[in-house]
Amino acid sequence: MIALLIRDLRLAFRAGGGFGLGLGFFLILAVLVPLGVGPDPQTLGLIAPGILWVGALLACLLSLDRMFALDHEDGSLDLLATAPIPLEGVVAIKALAHWLTTCLPLALVAPVLGILLNLPGPGYLWLVLSLLLGTPALSMIGAFGAALTVGLKRGGLLLSLLVLPLYVPTLVFGAQSVTRAAQGLDPLTPILLMSGITAGSLALLPFAAAFALRINLR
Amino acid sequence: MASLWEYANPVKFMQTSGWLMPVAAVLAAGMIAVGLVWGFFLTPDDFRQGSTVKIIFLHVPSALMAINAWAMMLVTSLIWLVRRHHVSALAAKAAAPIGATMTLIALITGAIWGQPMWGTWWAWDPRLTSFLILFLFYIGYIALWSAIEDPDTAADLTAVLCLVGSVFAVLSRYAALFWNQGLHQGASLSVAPGTRMDWSYKGPLYLCMVGFVMLFIALVLAGTRTEIRARRLRALLTRERAMG
Image 1: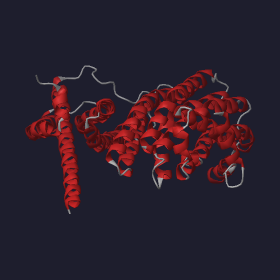
Image 2: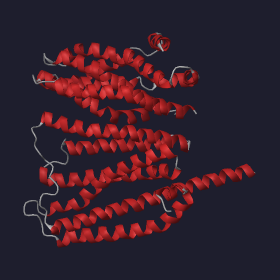
Image 3: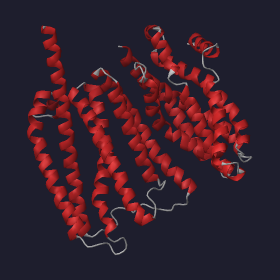
Image 4: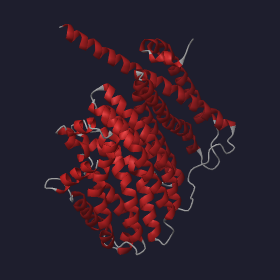
């Protein structure tokens, strides 16, 4: 399983792997929003938590359709499915690789973009923390969506249509925790609820995703 | 011994639904017609809301069915996954567009009511927001059905999506509640149902609700029958082609 993780990470980092695309998207979004909304720092500070969370979510969505599609095309997914490790484990590892290559950098870059958007002082710590705790759920839900659409030729758009409604609770609680922290309120309740969703997704969704993969591979 | 599982047999299902569907359709038409005429013309106007309140006779029944259609899809998806009855999967497929339409009716009638009452077509009230999200879930479910060619694969995948989606739909409901309480201080826009309503309102409302249930049953049966016939047609065509 570790070998699989290392393989996926290598594929992502090497040329053509698409590493950094999500980061670039996130950056562009954080630049475009002030251009659209106007440079008023007060307004930007008010919407910064929501923008950063929505941006991270969309950037995470960008690379989802590659999660199983490439392996499906060249047949290595069939090999993985017949390998001695359980398919649930494969799904979890794939989601972990996606998280490490896409979501973790997003969480680390987010405070810099927070400065661009004039995020109020107390929000920074909770922004990073909420992204770190919330994005694993995004990767795992995304893995489930990617497993559902892996056999389709133009699965990308359908994938976002399926996955985005599932992202709603994570987004609401994640953005709420940052908003509350930025306003000087207690952000603990939403962040705990969000972590609950993450924990539940990590525990249950590998089974659903592996089930979907098996159906698509039969 | 009659049991529900008999209807897993398509022939048996077609026999029973053949007479059940027209009965439900006639009942639905009758009840909705009587309920709406009673509610719109014979019930006095509300002393504060005037005649706009009467949209409740369409709004509440459609909202009821919007949620119950998803619940029905959840049950039929489970039956499909566990017992592999094709009729069950096809019923779930037939229910999805109807549920989506009901959600849309509830949203639109709500907007028409909200404009004169709240002064806005749309407010990000938790209840409104959850319905919009429910509509998105319906769209995703229908899109997945239409995207996959192999019918059994499609049935399996949409069933899994329905199960996972149900969990997240409930989570979204509570997230929306949390979210709006966090921003607005409990500006309760929604009218609490069942608060001492007079029978001149309750009567037509109940009648319309049961009428909508009947309408839903009739439509789902019609949709399922269509799907079964389409399957049979496809099987016949394949056989003919094989015979040469």
